[in-house]
Image 1 (cartoon, rainbow, N blue to C red):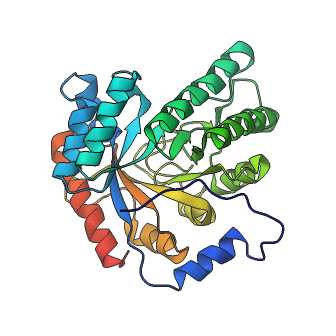
Image 2: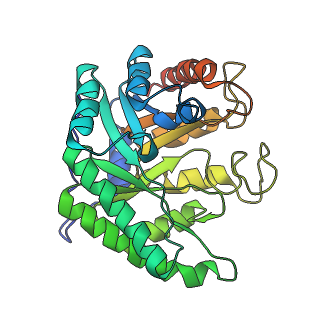
Image 3: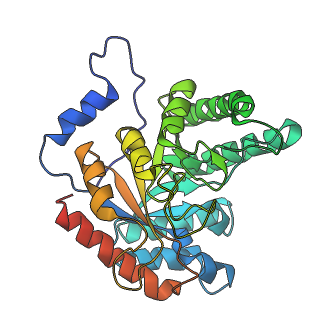
Length: 310
């Protein structure tokens, strides 16, 4: 079973950059990427009151998956008894708890921004109590009338505070490129933010469908790629820094993802020596019901991992 530890702080004595370390790893034996189920795959079913998080954990075991990503809205409680129940449910099914997904917005100001920072800290505490190694964070939705550049320092300082808190608790904070008008919106912006925050407990959760230009992004016409932004290039830019990959699925009725080209994406991930967790994240509820789609997505991603020996 994979074990997860907090990263060691890099020192000036290191003579290899993260990219060089990835390149060295890519020349080794084929990786053994493990699949996890993002609980938001059952977003509509959960919101309709037809499934609980514990039942989603059962689904992950039924599909022979290796782990689960738990969205913060799916927790029925954060009382000790409930958190222990979730933890034991995963342990008994052989499932790793990869991260807790938290939805924040560091574009807020004043008291509202403080609420967002405190929200992240609250769920870092929950992760620490459960032994979950990482929480997911977003960047900023820039308020109307403000530029990305003027909002950037606020994003950096808020994230620094959260990353430092995560470090104090032994929990990594993972930056998710989640673009529906949010920054960071491109691979270059993700790298910039990671470097500006510069904390070993601040890392990157790479979402294959959420860079600007992707068919899954709500800006522009959904379902159509915007080549002006080259979102595959953004994936390539930030992939060397990723510790977790969210494999987005939008259209799977045929048994193969139709909006994203995984024959382009998988080699990018493989070539940087990625050997972490990959979540299945279904967001095609407008086309196909979740109970039908999730098994199809699971089979498809397994076939892609086999095709590229990952």
